[in-house]
Image 1 (tube, rainbow, N blue to C red):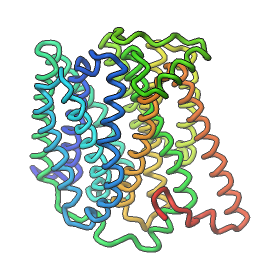
Image 2: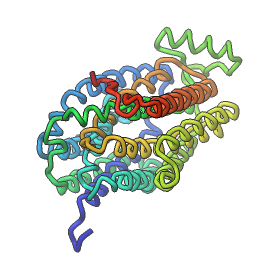
Image 3: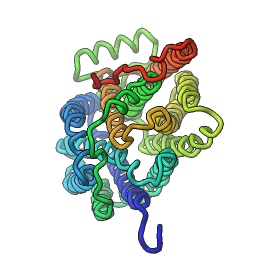
Length: 437
């Protein structure tokens, strides 16, 4: 802040605060909505359908239009303004439909717009800092801000839901979206990437170290999507093992084979609403801790060790959650995934900054974020179409994190050995990332 004029980063931070507030308000307002009052089998089918219909086109189009938007002055700024404005409209129209089937497409439209905002924000961060050294610090501050605003916005939203119902909270979400739009109008109009990627930038981003880290980070983002929907349906009460026939057969077979409780009958009640709040609170609080600790740990440990340590800790904690089960296991898993995702993302951003000094970070981070969102969808889709017992799901998270840690450690060790023996490919091998060649 210089005098009465906010710095570019402060302006973006204010927009981000309002966007995060909108996300928290929408999540809180939907806690008592139709999704949690209809049989789980029906909810599962509709969630799967709208996850495909809303996210699939976005996943296909975003990688194609992203580079074009980057080269247009103000392209990502317009994307932020548009996503926030449309989210406000969606909240407004969602308010009177919390008890009918129109809720589902509107809720997932809000989800897609939130993801679009996240990609645009990732691209703009490098344009609002004074130096490349400030990138990780800026991302850390935004992550901390996300945690704080999540708590601050959820409290009044929960009060409105209790007093007046979910519709009133959604109107509050529409208001925060309007504020975000007004603030976003003050963002500078700049091109994120005026020129197409050159050979040096492409080679650096396809380097072995970044390639390995992006694979590990992508798998972690898939775990986040998987955990989100696994916990949502588990706390919902399991419900009917449908409507997907494969889900019906697999869900029952897994339960019988593992000796875990059979899912409740259609219409059976799930966990109390406060269980949802507690699990979400654990995730947000742990994510906040991860965002605060990661930059400090980076002063004494390299990025590779932070990313590897994060995956290893997630493996151990997810295994403990699988053993514990119940509400304790759900909170433990949510906290470990929340902390791990935030800490690993900051380490990954720092690694890209370190190993690709000639890359345009706005374009690069937006590209990575787009691919990570696609993996998030794939991860979330599995527990939606296949009813998975909670404790088995927790064990699956532990196995996936363990595999990611082992693969990443092996890859880093192999790269260092090749570099030590004089193999130049270990430094910047032209191995393409997903969707790059």
